[in-house]
Image 1: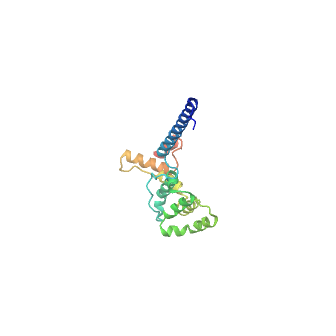
Image 2: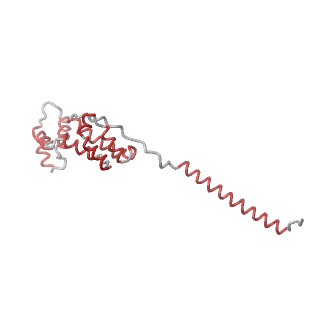
Image 3: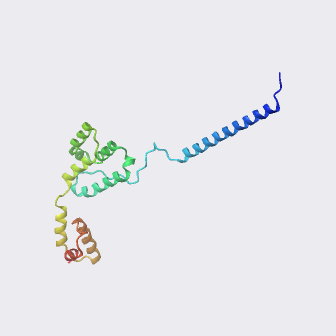
Length: 182
């Protein structure tokens, strides 16, 4: 058996050193990838809700004006955490008392038939039933008949500003606001 020459030994050592460097590079790349995967948030993790759940709407008209902005805010801010359009539709539906749910059963049936899960169909139906179409006019009338009476000026101004917003008068000319205030 013939002994390898110095040149052959040197070539074999160089080949082994190249392979060791290549393997070290592969290990380094895998370590970097592992570190990246550990530090990057998982894409299949559902985001967490940040707003509390609104209380169920019980069908009392005076509570609708506060429930509607609450449910809209929840869906706007936490919509991704709630889920896809189907989950959002059922989220709105399940935030209604059973007798109010009965009122929107046609919207539920339609959504199931069409597989179109637009929660706005529920909100639109409830708005038609519970919103006062004369709310702005009634607030304007209230604004013009408002009297300070015995309450402090600060309390009266706060009350006036609240009713001014209800009457959608925040954008009125200052002359009109002053006239209403007097």
